[in-house]
Image: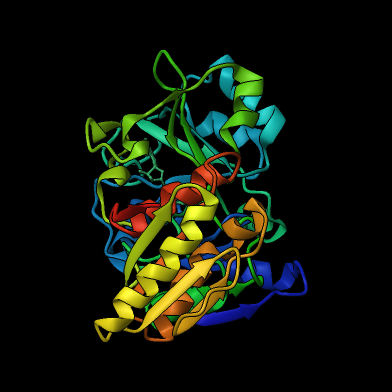
Amino acid sequence: MTVVINMRDGVDEGKIRVAARFILRGKLVAFPTETVYGLGADALNEKAVKRIFEAKGRPPDNPLIVHISDFDDLRKLAGDIPKEAKLLAERFWPGPLTVVLPKREEVPYTTTGGLDTVAVRMPAHPIALALIKASTPIAAPSANISGKPSPTLAEHVIDDFYGRIDCIIDGGETKIGVESTVIDLSSERPTLLRPGGLPLEEIEKVIGEVEIHPAVRGKLVDVARSPGMKYRHYSPNAQVIVVEGKRENVRAKIAELVEEYRAKGLRVGVMATEEYGADEFFHLGKTEEEVARNLFRALRELDKRGVDVIIAEGIEEKGLGFAVMNRLRKAAGYRIVWA
Ligand code: TXA
Ligand code: MG
């Protein structure tokens, strides 16, 4: 049975205690963060963490992020906390930033996918923070079946997990809409493993230049440091195609592709920052922030409307656009049309 707790009007301490009890008893609780919904379990309880992998159908070597509610929790999880981690935590926590550090013995290898490092973040969401405070550090991947778009509404979590996990907290739509930025601080040079809700430009203002792991750009080499990078991601049932290039060319190319696929008898959906004629259309918004917030929802919704093909407009790779394009290209399996 799945208990759905409505907390759309804000934190309710009584309801938080109910959810915290599930966590402390080794059960699974989905909860909102500022980025996407997470599927949480006690990070230090190996059996509980195993259930996350089973529920998601997640390969066991793809490590989880541990969510904390204060900086002291970090000392319990990570052995060596370098200067960069302190600077970034001070500036950006709570917030959409995950740091990878050498793990302490107490953190089970099940949580870290067999790695000697642990990924940690302090989420900027009152429900997430209250839940962690009332229980323990919580391991939580995004609350979607492995390979599907991440959930930005409780409805998405219900679609994927109703009847298969113990509790879902409905906190309404998540604010940022793409997952946290992941930075590896466990080796000599800070390395970006996943662009996300905190723009890289902001991070570099604090710790200087950050190396970008080649897999971020889609090159499938040396995936050992972030095994998550090698798996299929964010894929709806429909085939996604991303159109990138100069704005004026993109518009014409999308219109052309819509006609081409319709002529083949396919139902075509378009997701873009301006209106297009197609069988189904999802407006992503105008700014990078709006596009990030609407991205996963658009993929899920166009799927529900039964399209065969989704044509997505690419945006500029600056700010949140870096995370958006990373997710879109993956969702498309790197099927990119250059306009
Ligand atoms: O915003 C977010 O980060 C959301 C919310 C729920 O907090 N969580 C999330 O988790 O996106 P997940 O599991 O979907 O993505 C975690 C990413 C994966 O790419 C994984 O490979 C990487 O973090 N990761 C986790 N632990 C790692 C480690 N020790 N070393 C390298 N990469 C790690
Ligand atoms: Mg995920």
